[in-house]
Image (cartoon, rainbow, N blue to C red; front, side, top):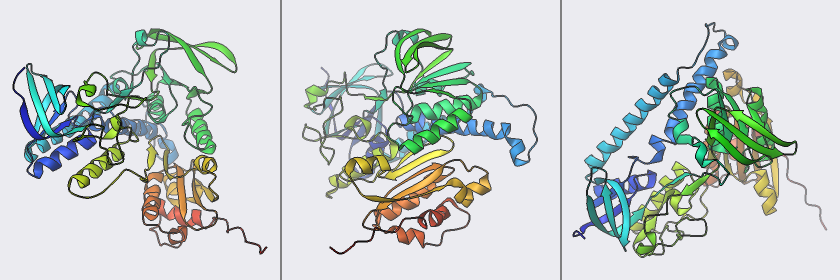
Length: 469
C-alpha cells in the first residue's frame, strides 16, 4: 500500500454541496482535495437540472412555432432537429464544466478525477481515471455521493436497456413512441418535452394520480393539460413485464381496472425515483452507517456516525433538489465556522418545470388535512392573474392556505405561467413571519406574476366568528 497523502479537507463528490464546500475551504486557506469519478460539478450542470431545462426550453420554442397563429405570427411547416437540440444543450454543459474547472483552479482546490474507495476511517484509495492509484486521508471528510435513477424490479426491464433522464437528454433522434414509467416530476417534464418535439408519448403511473404528493386538483389539472397535448396517461396501472429493446421496439404488459393489455412503443424511459450512491464505497470501513433505505445516517447538523465525517445532498436523505443541497453546504460551512445551524424546520420550495409550471411552498391541502391543521383557502384561476392574460397562457390556478384562526400563511401552490416567481414572494413573506394581509395590501408592479397575489388574497375567507359560551 502506497503512503497516504494528507489533506485537511477531503470531499468525495463534486456535486452542489461538495463543490461549494471545496471552494470555500480552499479559499479559506485549507489544504483541500475533492474526488470526482465522472461529472465535474455533479449531476445538476451535466445531466439533470440545467440540461433538462435547456431541452424543455427547446420544446417550448417548438410549441411557440406550432402555435404562432395564435399570436398573429405566420410561419411554415415546423419540424424538430434533435441533433440541433442536443448541440444546444451540449454547448451549455461544456460551458458549465469549464466554469467549474476554472473555479477549482482559482480557489486552489485540488480536483482528483477518479473513483474513491474507503479502506479505513477518513482514508480512501482513489483509482484514477488516467490510470494508477492514490491513497488519500483527510482530517475532515465530507461525502456528497449523490443518487441515481432507480430501476424497478420488473421482469425483463434491465434487458430492455431503458433510458433514464441521462440518456433521454442525450437523444440525437426523435423517438416514434416513448413509454414513460413514472408520473413524478422527472417523468412529467420529459414526457411533455418529447411530445412537443413530436414523439407519441404514453405515461404509466402505478398510483391513482400524477404527481403523487400534490393535491388532487393539481393532479387533475396536470392530467387535463397532458391529455390536451395528446399524451396518453394510464393511472392505477401496474407493469408486470417488459419485452424488447428500447430504441427499437418495446412491449409493456400492464394491468389496471380495465384488465390486462400490452402497450407497444419504440423507446422506454424509466423515471420511478432515486437510489443513493452509497453502495460499493466501503463506507462500513469508514464507520459510516446507512439507514434501512440505503441513505447515510446523519443528525440535524449533517454529521454521520463516524466522527469528523459529514454527508450532504441526496446521499444524506435530503430532499432531492439542488437548492436543498446548497443549503446543506451552508449548514456544514457555518457550523465549521462556529455557528449552530441545523436542517430542522427548513422551508423548502418545490417546482416542476412542465408548461405551465407547478410551484409549491409550505403546506398543501393534502398535508394540512393529514396534520389536522385548520386553514382557510383562497383560490383563483390564472385568468385572474393579469400577467398570464398578457402572455395568453391562462391555464391553471393559484391558491394559498391561511391559518384557520390566524392570518399566518401556511402554504402556497400554483399551477400556471411563471408561478414560481409568485411563490418566491410568498416564501419570502413566510420566512419573515409576515401575515397574508401584508402581501394582500402590497403594491406589486403591474403586470407581473406577483401582482396576482393581490387578487388571490382578496378572496381569503373571513375567520369563523367565535360565539360566547
